[in-house]
Image (tube, rainbow, N blue to C red; front, top):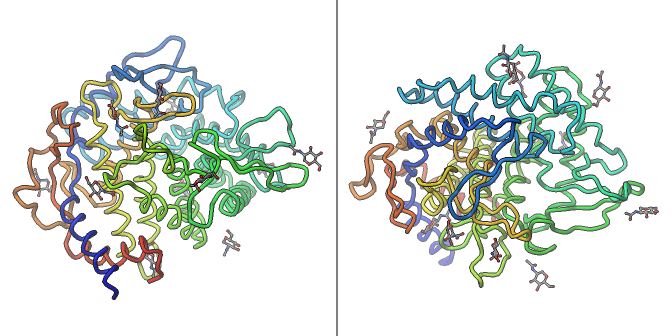
Length: 461
Ligand SMILES: *[C@@H]1O[C@H](CO)[C@@H](O)[C@H](O)[C@H]1NC(C)=O
Ligand SMILES: *[C@@H]1O[C@H](CO)[C@@H](O)[C@H](O)[C@H]1NC(C)=O
Ligand SMILES: *[C@@H]1O[C@H](CO)[C@@H](O)[C@H](O)[C@H]1NC(C)=O
Ligand SMILES: *[C@@H]1O[C@H](CO)[C@@H](O)[C@H](O)[C@H]1NC(C)=O
Ligand SMILES: *[C@@H]1O[C@H](CO)[C@@H](O)[C@H](O)[C@H]1NC(C)=O
Ligand SMILES: *[C@@H]1O[C@H](CO)[C@@H](O)[C@H](O)[C@H]1NC(C)=O
Ligand SMILES: *[C@@H]1O[C@H](CO)[C@@H](O)[C@H](O)[C@H]1NC(C)=O
Ligand SMILES: *[C@@H]1O[C@H](CO)[C@@H](O)[C@H](O)[C@H]1NC(C)=O
Ligand SMILES: *[C@@H]1O[C@H](CO)[C@@H](O)[C@H](O)[C@H]1NC(C)=O
Ligand SMILES: *[C@@H]1O[C@H](CO)[C@@H](O)[C@H](O)[C@H]1NC(C)=O
Ligand SMILES: *[C@@H]1O[C@H](CO)[C@@H](O)[C@H](O)[C@H]1NC(C)=O
């Protein structure tokens, strides 16, 4: 082994040993308190939180026909799930399922007249969650099937993709990397109806995306424009990123998740490899402080805003990818551990920066759209993936509800500063770590290390 690799191994070893701690904020009672407070501010006519203002963290509300409307009801379903996996007296005091259903209800007529284009996939999320609770609920089934057919109707066989945004020139066929997330509704509907065409559409879309949205280094373009007459790529560019040749971090995060999800549904290794490749770019391009910038290539001066939503989505994608590695035969335990450890570090670093007890949102430091000067806000999908990360860490047996990591060596006295579920003071955002929890198992970490070296060094094990 070369000295460089040894040095890298030692660096990573030191870093992991020092940093593998879950932030206690993940399981703070404030999570449920804030979400409940927002759920109780019912708007008439119905409106949905999307982002906060920059100074006070006050939610701004938008009409149901907005691409993000599904995320708040889906967060309520996530707290209903939290109630079953981590029942506390406080969680039991609220009818989370009832709130989730009420908040979904204004979306129900949308499946026949939405103008959100491909984002019907995001709008379908609460109905997919409802079906996990009541698999026979006709309203939810109809919503999922209608949203799926609406997305399928945007498929063009010449291009091989579903159209993301509508354009004035109909031959200008625009596909954004985010669209990978919307494919989920096609699988869900196919599961309900047995209509395999929907899966063929999802597969075709993913196959085109991995060829035309990815660069050789695993980074991604935000937007690819195809000519729908010829099927050829006209342009690879950005909309929300820094430059056409840069990598917008949220797009990269949607891709990690989206391809890991394609692997989950199809078991096609090409999708697992694509998710790994995108994860490798994301992880090797994180700056030294571990804070996810809004665009990996945005200049450092003036200081580039973070995007906490990209961090939470990427972390959730890495958890999904870790399960893909485990599903291999034989299970790729070291690969799985590596992605779990990376997810935990991203969550920990971003929570330290962005957790805001005094804001209505859980996190600050979200960048909705920096070219449109919309940065440093709370964002509803950042909060949703923050809640989902905590649920998934428990469901996957990685953490307990008090924020400790399982299968772990006992935490060293210095690693366990505050008690379980304690709320840090606002000053914790200065970078003083107040998290509690134990380090992940030494064994897992050592096997993860070899993978870290291989992944970060771009080597094949
Ligand atoms: C069925 O799902 C819809 C939409 O999610 C929800 O509003 C409704 O309350 C559910 N009905 C029952 C009986 O659970
Ligand atoms: C399957 O879905 C496709 C795309 O929405 C649709 O065109 C087709 O009619 C469906 N097939 C059946 C049997 O419903
Ligand atoms: C697509 O190609 C057709 C045929 O070559 C051409 O007429 C049309 O202008 C092109 N559209 C775009 C958006 O480039
Ligand atoms: C299909 O639905 C069944 C229950 O109806 C569920 O157990 C299964 O996980 C679903 N499959 C997918 C791919 O979502
Ligand atoms: C897996 O996907 C790739 C393209 O993305 C395709 O070429 C290949 O045929 C697929 N494999 C299977 C077994 O479906
Ligand atoms: C993007 O292009 C510009 C101008 O050609 C170049 O200076 C920059 O280094 C490129 N950035 C990346 C990430 O390739
Ligand atoms: C988290 O930040 C610390 C420095 O504060 C850094 O050592 C660590 O590598 C970061 N984690 C990630 C995943 O970048
Ligand atoms: C995080 O947000 C705070 C304000 O809420 C801001 O002062 C700080 O510069 C932001 N940091 C980053 C890296 O975006
Ligand atoms: C295990 O996962 C790592 C990280 O994705 C990968 O580099 C390695 O090739 C995988 N090993 C096997 C045997 O699949
Ligand atoms: C963030 O947005 C503000 C306006 O809200 C803008 O003035 C500033 O330039 C943006 N920050 C960066 C680094 O682009
Ligand atoms: C957290 O929970 C685990 C198991 O449920 C328990 O062993 C541990 O002592 C708890 N830690 C704290 C700090 O309460």
